[in-house]
Amino acid sequence: MPLRNLAVVVALLFAGALYISFSTYSVSDPVSNLSQNINTPQPVDDLEAVLERAASGNNNTVIIALVNRAYVEEVGEGRTMLDLFLESFWEGEGTMSLLDHLLLVATDQTAFDRCRFKRLHCYKMDIKGADLEGEKVFMSAEFIEMMWQRTHFLIDVLSRGYHILFTDTDVLWLRSPFSRLSNNGSLDMQISVDKNSVNTVRSKINTGFFHVRSNDKTISLFRKWYDMRLNSTGMKEQDVLQNLLDSGYFNQLGLNVVFLNTTEFSGFCQDSPDMGLITTMHANCCRHIPPKVFDLTRVLSDWKSYKASHVNKKWSPHHKCRGSWKDDHYVPKP
Image: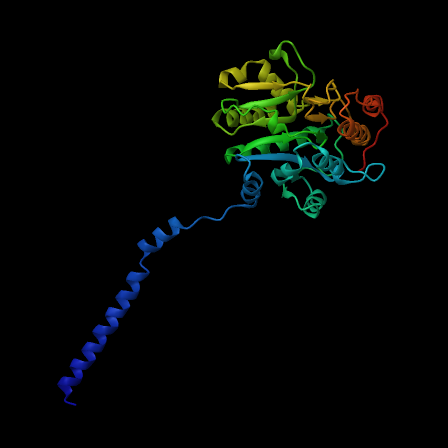
């Protein structure tokens, strides 16, 4: 082959290589890749994933309860507070399916493992610098800290756009609260009280059971509430929220709040007189876990009897809980 023709062939091969190179670069150019990255769904964290599962099919509402090791350990007769709580969903009217929307938030590994064993929606809260495993006696420094950790966690959930139905684990669910709570979208918060009051402005709220919608007003309330812990040494979070209510801060935010009556949302502070209307029973006005488990077990027995006969009667007296305030020698498990 003449030298001139060879040069032409080499030039053509080089041009072809350049074409392939530029074609390949154009397929993977950075602008195209950036567009693809923007359109690719970003991974969610563990909390978002479990909230999404628990809220599915429930109007973006998650039922949340907090548990620690003390609530999953046996207390007399082989029962745990968590077992009693979950049994109420099985024995309640229209409550069993609500377990699909229940998220148990564990403060320690033992409680988290027990939750996973029961195949529930579970999340282990990130606790830094605090020991929240054992029983925290009412109004102890550890009890107060646990309540503030809970409030901080709920701010995170609200900020993600989820509505919350919060329940303490010492609340028995005897009927579905969703059938009794107002579905009025203009209501920001529906919260339980210790006792009914003619003057609702002076209602003594109880943060052991409440429904709160996620919006700018409620998120502002919860952030203000949490921030006030710094100037509220020795006060439990419930009393701080009560002060915000009494001071008119709720009105400043334009919050629409309903106080739940104790005929339907009852507790040991004031029993419901009508088993045909009761929705939940809270072991409030009680100091320790063992008496709560004892007296709630009797409440659940009363409820089973009512379901069988539909005859209204008085609840069994809450003797153990009433006596818990006089037990100055009680020592919780470490």
